[in-house]
Length: 314
Ligand SMILES: [Zn+2]
Image 1 (cartoon, rainbow, N blue to C red):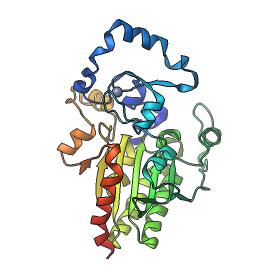
Image 2 (cartoon, rainbow, N blue to C red):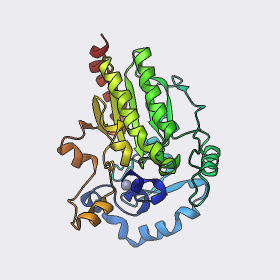
Image 3 (tube, protein in one colour):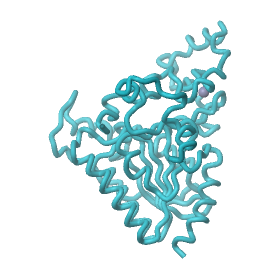
Image 4 (cartoon, rainbow, N blue to C red):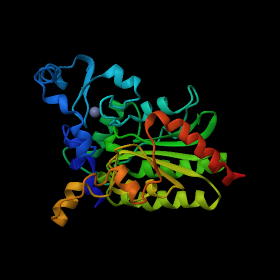
């Protein structure tokens, strides 16, 4: 169930197991020097909670301690193992778009607590806190921008906002982004990182799966062109709806992409899962992903794909 993947249920492998490997076991073993005593000391010195201003952080995949500035210079890709850190929406925009080209739309839309849902705290309070913390009203950023001179309609899911979960507003903004692409006759580009449907909104969140698919279908019927880039992690109702139905489906290296989490599946099937299960590379071999694109070549690749898709409009 998509709710099982909700961030509040904490079923995401890479987030829950901070020291676990979002990449393959082979990749993890590449960082073989971690057991050296000096490295051990270094790691103890720079425990996350002791890092003033977050100058250093730990790679979720290889456990290496990385200087934040170096990581930022490398587009948040681990210099040791190539793990692609999950980006905040605004960080993605900065990295992806031509400088100064971002023009945000529909930023004012906020969630309603229609069910008056309460778990550890009322949903309405949780939303208010998240809005204050992130400085944005919802998990999806939507607008227009340029990539190497090509104008695009853009929708970016932000994992920092309630695990990028899809409620009514996220669904509505995907539909609006598709309409924006249609009226402006621009390609639609979506980036996903999500725990799935937002359980706090119950059935209304599940309805967004049908709604977003219908919006993308309409865009397709009118000759539109869409690309989705799945980033780590993309799960639940988002994978099972709009993320999987664009003309082209890309993924970042090592991204966890699935419906139910690997642990849920292993427990249900009572079977050991194959190595690399639900990772982008595994899914590409089986035809779910068209291509895996590393962050440094993302802009260039997207630009060439837009040129290819332009034929759809002309
Ligand atoms: Zn690493």
